[in-house]
Length: 260
Image 1 (cartoon, rainbow, N blue to C red):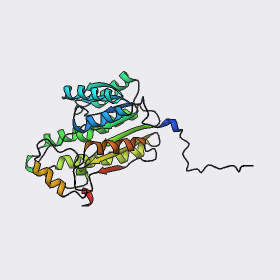
Image 2 (cartoon, rainbow, N blue to C red):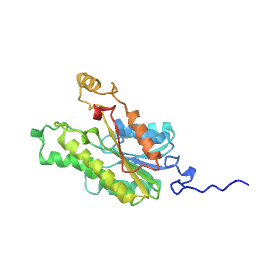
Image 3 (cartoon, rainbow, N blue to C red):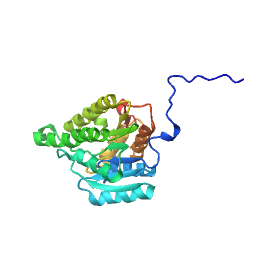
Image 4 (cartoon, rainbow, N blue to C red):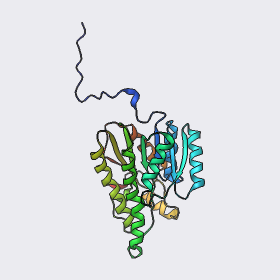
């Protein structure tokens, strides 16, 4: 007679069909009209998700993102919002739920990275950066959490600047350090119903105004000896969406620059 096997209390009883990246899940990606946000939206479309492509000014870019999401196998709608405006995150999330009927995954990607030497930092500049880079993801997460069911996932896009002192980008770095903090705090507050994690990219997409010399300097000072790509970040995000036992973490994707 076979001996009965007792399940360890640490063994997950979550059914195998409840993978949070399965087809049909509803996702919102902010700042998805271009660059990394586009890559993230298309990657979720490749998982068969229904993706709300948020944009502010890049209408044509958002339309192209939506086309690529559909080509990858997902569904897509585009939604415009200026997330720096008070109340806009709540309205955006409400519209996603109204259009798609729910929300399962939020990726907070919308951000601005502006070179700001200390002599150029004014109070309006500071407030504008923080409004988009930190306040918006917090209130998007708050609105999303109120509407997500158990198993919801929030991924914040932080930055290597959260962990290093970039003197030409002090407001940016401070805002991204704040993103790391709210990731940890929201993960604690929303557990176990919702998981919250972050990805902190390094040199995966250089600012548009950086030169070939800037790229070479970064390559030569990166332990893995190369720049990254958006695919490096999308793989990290997809891992965190799938990782049922990970919350409150910030995964640094920087080719080893933080340990150089």
